Image (tube, rainbow, N blue to C red; front, side, top):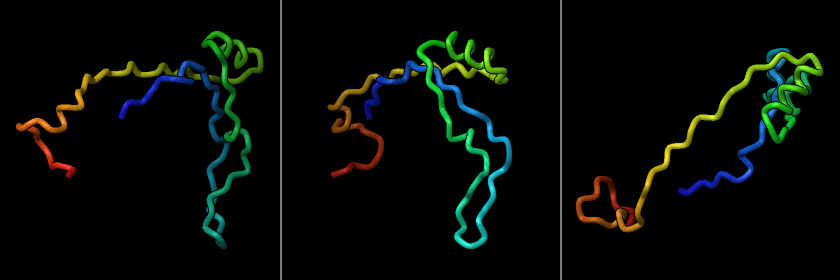
Amino acid sequence: MQSGSAQTKDWVLEFEPASARQVDPLMGWISSGDTSTQLKLEFATRDEAVAYATRNGIAFTISEPAPRKRQNKSYSDNFKFGRIGMWSH
């Protein structure tokens, strides 16, 4: 699969849950009274996200994205003689 990197450059502010989720005894659904976990704020830069959290008194931790590992693959490798694994056809 060749996943693109479109719309992955934004910084996202997500809120930690304030209380544990509860199971509804009738339907078995999981619910929470904390609606702030449904909120995600997107910022163009890291500095904007930090400034917003600081300005509004929100405690934050910054998680840097892991570097992507590029794997060069060739379509013809799917059909080579010494291939390891099951054939799909």
